[in-house]
Image (tube, rainbow over all chains, first blue to last red):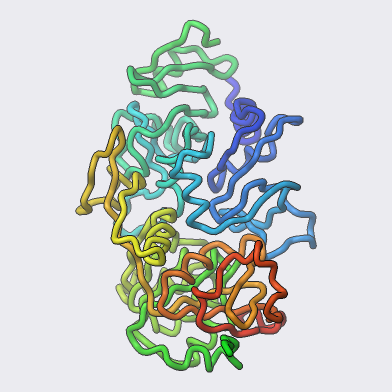
Length: 216
Length: 227
C-alpha cells in the first residue's frame, strides 16, 4: 500500500475544490492545500482575520507584519482581494457563505462529529480560535488527517472521546489511506490508495465502512 | 472645535481606573496597539479584565501587561501559542481567570455590544463543552446557543490614519477587531501612524466613523512596535 504523504494528501483535497469556490483552510496541515490547488482555477481563499483573496507567501524580505493569515504567517493579497473586520469575517463563515472549509482533526465520528481543538487533558490550556465557527458555518466541511494515530489507532471512531468542535458537521474526510463521505447511513468509502484492499482498510478503521461500487 | 487628538499615550490613558474592562485590538501582533499597551503598563492600573483574541505573544505588548500581573481575567479565543509563555505560567499558577470564547462568537458579542443588541442565538459551539450551562434553542432546523454582548470601559486599538473628528482607516489585516471594539467601549483610544486634516480621508472609505472614537494618539512608526 502507498500511503499519501502530506503534499499528496493536500493535492488530493485540492483536486476537489472547483473553480470559483470560496474556501477557508484551517491552520496546520490544511494550509498546505493552498500550494496544491489545480493551476488555472480561480479559487478565493478566506482567512478569519479579515481577508478574501489570500495569495502565496511573500518573497523573503517582502513580508508585511500587517498582512498575515489566521496562522499568523505572512501572506500576500491577490489582485481583487479585500480586507474586512472580524465580525464581517465570521458573518461570512456562520452565514454559510463559504463553500468549503478544510480542517484538521484528532477524531471524526461515524455521525460526522468533529474533535480538533482539545485533547481533553486536564492540564492542557484550551484554545479554540475559529474552529467551532467554521465547523457549523461552511457549506461543506472537509477534514484532512492521517487515518491512524501515531499508536496505530483509528481516528475514525464510533463516538469522539475528545471534546467536540462541532456535532454532525463533517461532510467528507480525506486521509492518507482513503476518501470517505459521511452520510446519514454511515461512512462511505469513495477511494482508497493504491494497493489497499477494502478489507484491510476496514480492519484498520474499526468502525463500519460502506464500500461504494465505484471505489477503486 | 472638536479635537480628539491627544498629545501622548500617557495623557490618553490617564483616567483608567483599577478594575476596568479593556478591549485591546489586534490579531497576534497585527493591529496590536503596542504604544498604548506600554503606556497602560506605565500607568500602573491593576485588576483589569482584558478582551483580545489572544493572550499575548513573546515578551512585549499584551504579554508584557500579563507579565506585570495587571490582569485579573482575560476573554479570548486562542490563548495557547508557541510563544504565550507569560499567559501559560499565570494560568497554570491559577493567577488569571480565562473565559474561552470561539472567535466568531467573541467578535459577534463585541459587535452586539456596540450595536445595542441584548443577546443573540448563534449555532457556533452547540453540543460542545463551550456551550455547557448556556441556554439553547432550536430555530427551524438548527440548534443555537444564547450569547450575551461584551461591553468595555475602554478599547485600545491601532489604526493607520485619523482626522481630528476621530474618523479612522486601517491597514490590511491590522483592521481585525478594531472597528467592532471601537463601537463596544465607552471610551475608545486609537493609536495611529498618521494624523491628517479634516477632509483628507475619503468619506466613502472611512472604516470607523469618529462617533466611535474618543481619543487619538499619533505614534511615530519607529515607536509603533513595543519597546
